[in-house]
Length: 167
Image (cartoon, rainbow, N blue to C red):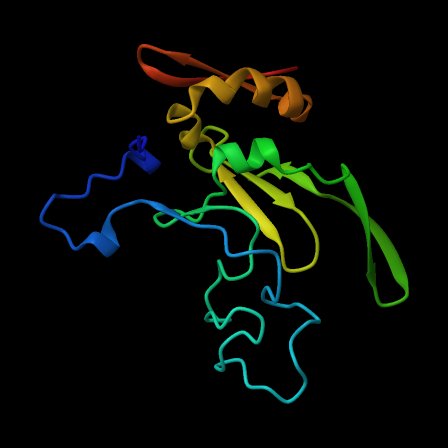
């Protein structure tokens, strides 16, 4: 059974073309993602992927997770199932090295924690929109236990999704 997507309260009229309706784009493997060193030298970016024949300019090509067609979020179950990266990684800029987080909340420009960034490696940057926890509310305890150290927990109520900032 398909679970309806409640992505950002998207209100798509039934008359809209199917391409405008939110849905989950299937994972397309874990290869030749944008920015990958697996691109063949001298092959134009517009040519199909040499591994699967897919469109290499598609931002979801080669990602090992499902992606929301509306907002680009990683599927909540895939976030759960994929091993999370280390908390920090070292980035070299010029001759200096910096530590940067691999998992972090975006700014709260909407007044609440709406988006989580996850860096799974070069060319594999995922974003997770917290609204998708409404569809997969059974993952909220896992989310809180696993990612609550980032300072935010969630709960499902009759009014929707509520968050709590940890201090």
